[in-house]
Image 1: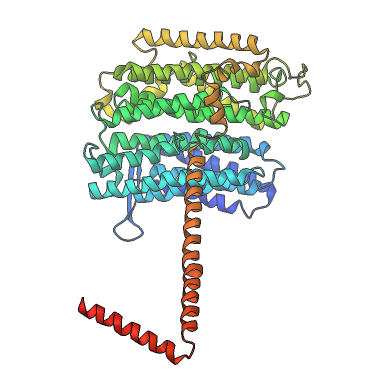
Image 2: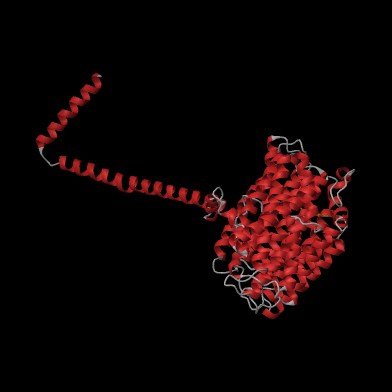
Length: 610
C-alpha cells in the first residue's frame, strides 16, 4: 500500500494532466481541483514516514529508486499545498481564457514531475523528472500573450544550459562514487574532480531555484506567462525543488565544511544574487516584474544560509525556502487579483485600490512585511538565522545581506504605495474596482495566515520541520527558535527597516508620487548609467550569449562564403585562365612547337646539370 501511494504521488497528477487535454472545457478546472486535492491527501498521509523502493529500470544497471524520509515528505506536503491553492485560484483567473486546458495540463504534470524528482533516490531517475519540468515550463510560458513564445525559448535555453552542466556533474558524481543511488553517495569536494562535480551540481540546483546567472527568463515570463504560473513555479515549486536538491548536495552527496573554499564561493553567489536582483526590483514600474526580481533576490538568502555550512545558517536557509514560497506565492496571487480586477499591473495606471480591495490589500501587507523581514512575520525569523550564520563566517556577507533587506523593504513600500494607496496618476481613484472573487481570496488568505503562523509560532516549523533535516549531530547544542541570542542582529534589522521607511518618505516627497519613491536612487549620477545599460539588457546573460552566437554565426557565414569563393570562383577562373592560355599556345604552328621543344630541352639540361 505504501509503495502504491508513493508511486501515485507523481503518477496521479501526470495522468490527470494528460487527461485534462481531451476533457470538455467545463470539467477541466474541476479535474484539476480533484487531482490536487487527492495529491495533497496522499502527501499528508505519507508525511513523516520512511520507505525505500528499488526496482530494475531502463537497463544498464540503472535502478528505479524512490526514498521517502523526513525531508522529502516535507517538500512533498509543501508542494502539494501550493499546487492545490494555485489550482483553486486558477478556477476564476483562467475562466474564459484561451488555452485553459493546456494550462491545467501543465500545472498537474509539473506537480507530478516535482513530486517524482523529490522522491527519486537515483540521480538518473531524478534527472528524468527534472528535465520533464523544462518541457512544462516552456509550455506554461508559451500559452501566454503574443510575445510569450520568445520568453519561452529564452527560458528553455537558459534552464537547458544549466541542466546540461548538471548532467555532466551527475556523470562525474556517479563515476567518483561508483553508484547513482543518492543515499549511498558520500563524497568530499576537496579534490579537483570532486570540486568540479560539486560545482556543476550546484549550478543545476541554484539555477532551478532562480539564482544568477541563469535567472533572466523570470522577469520576462512574469509579463508574458499566465500569472498563476509565477505563483506556482518560480515562486514555489522551483524554489522548493532547487533548494531541496542544493541541501541534498551539501548535506548528503558531499560534505561541505566551513573550511572548504566552496563555502565562501556559495556565500558570495548568494550575496551577489541578493544585491543585483533587488537593485533591479527597486526601479521596476510593473507589479509582476517587480515581484519577479524579488523571486530571484530571495534565493540569495537561501544559498547564503546553506553556503555557511554551519547549523544556524543551514536551518535559516531551509526555513527561508518554505517562507519564501509562502509569501512570494501570496504576493503573486495579489498581483493576479489586481490584474483581474483592474486589467493592468502597470503601477502608473494603478493607485488607491486598497479601499476597493481590502482583503487583497491586507494579504499584500502581510506578505510584503514577511519578505521585508518585519517582525513578527515568518521572513523575519528565517532572515535572522541566515544573518546569524553569515555574521559568524564574516561580516562582509552579513553586510551584503543586510543591504539587500534595506532595498527589499524600500521596493515593497513603493509597490504598496503606488498600487494600493494614493490616487491614480490623473488624480482620481479607481473607484469602480471590486474585490476579487472568493476562489481567488481563499488561497491568498490561507498563505497569508501561514506567514503569520510561521512567524509568531516559529518554533513549530523550525523544531518539527526544519531541524530534523540537518540531523541531531549538527543540531545538537543549538537554539534556533524565537529571537536570536545576538540582540545586535535584531537591532540592526529594525534600524534597516526604519531607514527604508525614511528613504520612502523622502522619495515620495521628492517625486510627488508613490511610484517614484525610488527615483532618487534610480537616477543618481552613479547608478543611472548602470541602470540604463541594465534596462537595455547589456548585462542579460541570455542576450550576451545570443550576441556571441550571432557573432560566431556571422563569422562562420563569412568563412563559408570565403571557401565558396575560393573553390567555386577563384579555382574555376584560374583553371579557365590557364586553359585559355594553353589553348592559345597550341595554335598548330610547327615553328612554335619547335621553340617549345628547344626550351624544354634546355630546361631539362639545366636541371640535370644542377
